[in-house]
Length: 443
Image (tube, rainbow, N blue to C red):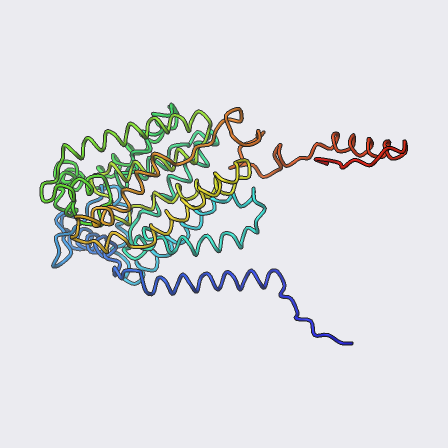
């Protein structure tokens, strides 16, 4: 008799279809949920460069027509962006998007590449899925839609810490220094190097930031004088701290005590966050968990910054990688992995959801939680983000290598072949002697 057999798809074809389906779902989500920001921040950069280079004006006097917003970055960033005055607007958009996408590809590879190799997953397939999910991450899509530089700064810092500093390179710290000279907030990673006693990397990063700042002062002395004496301290150029997009501790304090910004409360919260950060970072460096140290520093940088708009929260991405790393590590018991996976999925979905925008100007009752959802999540991550334990303290089986970086088998993956051979031999001896058969328990 003939029977019909449904042909099976080849594994590669099935993977391609899965990737296509995931990307289609993400694009549908973005079409519905993503804000259309019109590359507003890129428009600020572009207009400021045109005003400065082509029209001879003071870069910090420029404001986007009809708005109070102008250029707020140090002169070194202005020097790097100055070629923008020589290109068209649509070319600037294309370059901005391309740079962000390429940088994001490297960041994802560095953060979760070790997990992919440890799990034995198909590399291209895993990266394609991860890239699609990260595209739905609100801080990432906001950065791209605004034409911001946050992803590029994250690229410099992650590459520096995970490749150069961890690898013991003499250039370790140079990426952090350049990022700090472009925008001051990555300077928290120089403090991280000091707290973790990486003196040479801290010296390199400090010297790099100083050299870049000096070069910018030589290139644009008037702009440097205006920035360091006036524009840097003019907070009105940035926006209101109580605006819902500000998910730093300053935003939490401002919304709690609106319209009074509650600076004493803010300073108290900042000191508490820094104390927790120092304690946890010192623990991470003792066990050489550089990914956790990076993630914790990204969190505290967002929390203690005077302003952390939602698109600044790309610094939370390393925390998502830490949760994925631990939730998929079979060296931990199943219950812990399950809890970490639930927490990780919840955190990721929350940071895709635009929840704070649903409570704009509604900061009482439920709005007190919803309007501060991201800052409260970052506080929870700062306190609870898992850090690798030494083998002697781990609740799971002992490991010979760090599972976050290992690509080969670990102790618990290797069966006790000597014990199995002994039990099998004993069973055959018993059978030959006429004794009743006994089960090979554990064999």
